[in-house]
Length: 170
Image 1 (tube, helix red, strand yellow):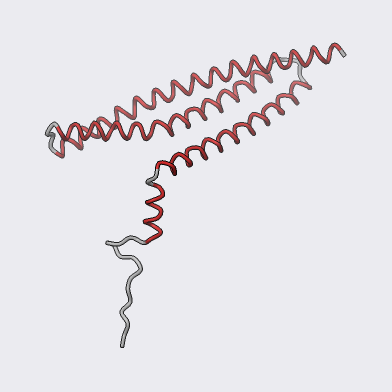
Image 2 (cartoon, rainbow, N blue to C red):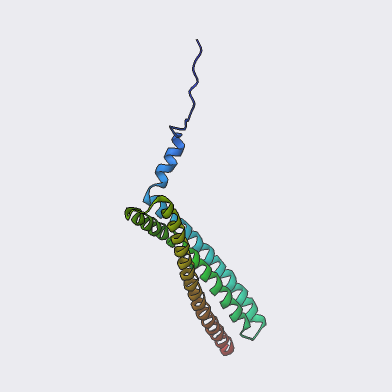
């Protein structure tokens, strides 16, 4: 007797690992943990970057009396933290924009728009939403970068001034 071989997964029945993965990824807890993991990684890497920039700044201050190292370090820190804030804001904005886009397309469908019109309107709406999000993202990121740069400059100059005062008193 010949045994019939059953396929392990057919197009109608996905494999158990695929189903398990879909089940996990559909949970809100999974996305929250992923979100926290990404932000934790960004925070740890930014902390390491901050420490290396400060050690570079301390080496430069020992060999130079000008304020240029503080300016370079503060601009570098402002740029990096501005980019990090834009990445963080983008991670939060993508799901919000997607929900907004779906809502608008569904509302257009309820108002009796034909499918071809929905596709055209959906493309227009996608372009408009993307443009608004990018403008807001750049504005917020530049604001964070400027604030970090200014605060970093004054913190480094003040730190340098207090270290010189302590060294001068000895």
